[in-house]
Image 1 (cartoon, one colour):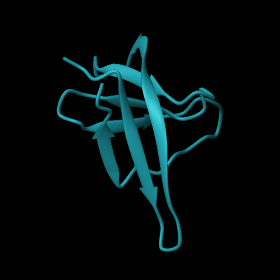
Image 2: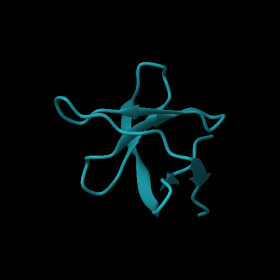
Image 3: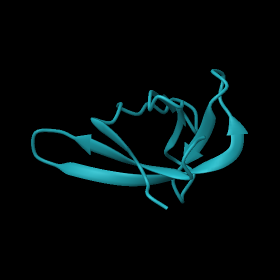
Image 4: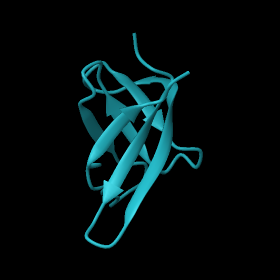
Length: 74
């Protein structure tokens, strides 16, 4: 069973930021659900073991992998 959403935590030496992504009706190349933020810019395929693959939502886009992936509690 996949959660409805995840909190993705991104860190660099000066900033820690969290983005909430919610499950969509799409699946990624690996067969796991695709999650995206409210803008549709941040997208990720997250499997049932919490492994994440960031997906580009536009040309030439590249996202760093988050330092933490936390399932949302519903």
